[in-house]
Image (cartoon, rainbow, N blue to C red; front, side, top):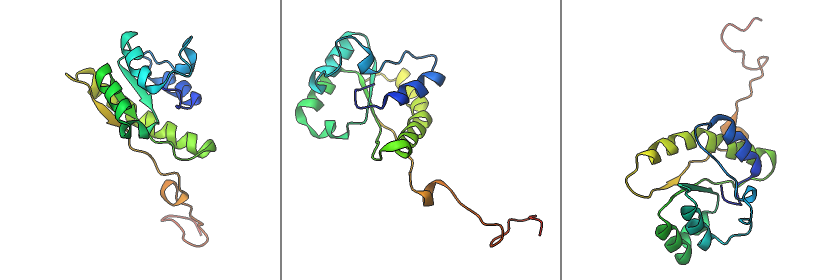
Length: 143
């Protein structure tokens, strides 16, 4: 996991992706602060197969795109646009739901793949429904 991935996400992912070895960049001696143009090559040389990142701008920087392509390892991106507990919860939900599917697809991939995990909406309108049974009683509600 790239440095920009929230560390609590690493804890969540390790709890259910037990068949995979997951490292957060900050846990690796001497890796913190590694520029992205060097990160992919270094990860490939050390045997990593994929990098999980939130850096959507990487694919807009020609030198970073070239570094990713040259490294030949998979790149998995997700978006974390919101801060705080809501942002972390949305990121954990999106990655926990999408990453197992992505990893299964990458296992048999004959070439390098770029994966973008779809996000989950943090807005109350999209995430939950609140019902006041006094105003709109559900079917079979006593009353």
